Length: 249
Image (cartoon, rainbow, N blue to C red):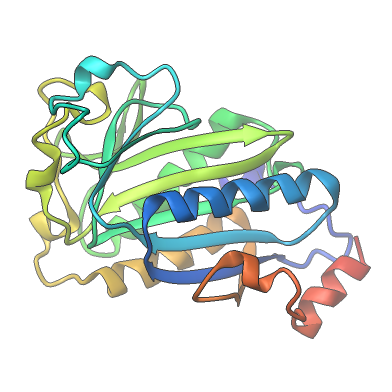
């Protein structure tokens, strides 16, 4: 699958991606950051971004999602719910989950949304394999599964070939918080986590492995961005190798 990625750069260098490790940040704040960064890419060829974050407990419902899969009272303020523009049904985010939001210009990768989704899935599958966990796809369903249970959810929004939203991999999060929804609208499918199969794996360990697989499949290299907000990095000076990349485009 990674062979689909085309290198636009004539010197064959890996495409730079600015990596943001944000820690725990509320969902609405990061959602607004994503929208701002995505829109800025409509106007100019700025650097691609990868946002890593954990969210306080929150539920999100994709465009066209079926609200009957939400089992709690939406007027109950104990449960935060956001209706957003990504594809897919209702899902849950909480600390201990790897949430990654790539903001990529697909003109420099692959202009095929199905292929993009498969690359996201494969990065997860390959990173799980490093911990002896056999992740797999289920035909007709987006995401990654282990023994029929769902370990990772994917939902994206793409405008003018610029991506936002992304993936959520259950690592060490509390799975009981999925009980008040039908996750991804999949009746009868349970949620699982990395620690369901390998209790010693930490979120930090899994994250580093995932980043290596992402780099391999998308043919990119990372440089560090802000740990506070991706917007803080817009005016920051990029490393010399990043400048050289753009000089050769």
